[in-house]
Every structure is written in structure tokens, then in C-alpha cells.
Image (cartoon, rainbow, N blue to C red; front, side):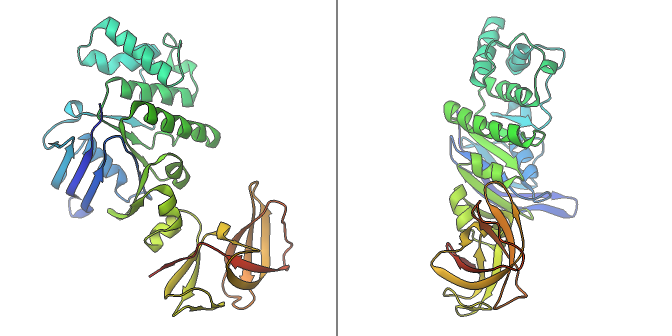
Length: 331
């Protein structure tokens, strides 16, 4: 089963501190939504309210149209996967996965069958008799996911579940999460501060800042067409060039006034927008590209970050003629 989720004018205060000043958010049944933002932005507080670990100061949380007010965590149609796995070390993997079913009074044979199916779903078929200490961190996280899905929640909540994994394993688990969500069709609400992770897994990213929703949309939209300067800067590196009536320190560029935002990969040696010449300050090989810091000749006080092709490694002092694409002008 799966269900939609409604966050209706939710306010959360802790004493005099207002953590969430009023959140409105609709999540469709079967959608994979990532709450993304820096530490202290309110994303984990919102996840805890959905899970029932706390009650909002005001506002409503509805799951499948049902108001969750006064309903504790164990009685909500949700389960939560945490970063620390929280597996029982003395239990087998099958017993860990079946634990929630046991607490619900499901019979032994049905529990065993369901546990085996869930372990198979997360790529651990035949490992039911193993213990958690025999597994890698990524495998233990898979068991935690299997246990959460075994009770067939309508909404699965994930609180930075990949944060303790190394980069290579984290990327592999991102692919696994996306694949598993597509198979089970359950609504996933995932909290992270990792922009790359959010873009890899989400149907929709909800960017949060100081307790408010700053921006939201599919990953491509939020990255290439951010609505605010905060989103533009938080979603990755951005070059900011002041713009007034189409003019900038580099000369006429694009129509508009405000801040012209250009991603480093949108600046190179060809493109529709001429930025003019720039002197290389330093450059380093980053595997997929060469990352260079440059100073425009027309405005040497500006500093731009540019991603150049792998084979290009300009020396400091070298002058490049630069162009840009995909401009975004924000107030």
C-alpha cells in the first residue's frame, strides 16, 4: 500500500524558537521526495513530525487523507530508516527483518516468508541466517531498509540513511534505493544535506532554508532554473555576476537586472554568450573535468570558476576567451 501526504500550515516552536514558521507541502502517493537543506534548516524536524516523534505546535499532517493528530509513531502508517541502522546484533537478519511483523502479531511462517522476500528485494537472498556483524555497512543498511518495508508502510521515511557510508558505496546505495522504490511503489520521504544524493534519487527535491521551503521541483529544474539565490548557491557552485539593465562589469551579456548566475560547467571556450577574455589563476585536474579559477580581463576583481574539458590544463597566466550558456537571472 501507499498513500499521499499533506503538510498543512505546520508550525513548530521549541520555547521561543520558531523552527518551522508554516509549512505547506503536498506529496503524491508513490512519489520519491527528498527534503534537502543545510543543518538546522528544519528538514529533520519536519520528518520527525511526519513520523509522530513530536506533535506540531499548530497545523495538520494527513496521510492518505487521515489526520495524524494524537496518533503515536507505532500506530502511524509510516516506518523510519535511520543512519545508524539500529539492527539487533543478537538476531539473525531474517529475525531483524521480521521484528516489526512479530510486534504486530503476524504468525511465524508468514513472518519468515515475508522476511525472505524482503531480503531478496534488497539483494541479500539466502543470507537470512547471518548476523549483522558479518555484513558491510551497505549491507546492514539494506537490512534496515528491508525491515522497514516488511511491515508495508504507506509512507517510508529515511533520515540521512546513507550518511555513514563511503562515497563509492553511497552512490551504489543511491541506485539501489531508487530501484527498490520503483519496485515497491511506496511513498518515500528522504532527508539529506547532500545535493548530489538528492539529484540522484528524487522525483522531486524540496529545498529548505531557515524552516521554509525555498524551492521545489524535479532535480533538473531545481539545478538549472533555481528560483532563489540561496537555491542556486546551495545546489552546487555558482558564478555570480551583477547585472543592471543587461549590462555587467564584463559588458552587455543578457537582458535583465539582478544577479546573473552561471554554473562552472556552463562556462567554456564556446557558447552563445561572450564573456570576453580571462586570465587563468590556477587549474587542477578533477577526473571528469579541469577546474580553473580565472579573472576576467575586463573586470579583474571578479573571480570565476570554470570547468574545462579533461584534456585542457591551462597554465597560470594563460589567457582564455570564454563563452557561457544556460544563464539564470535572479533578483
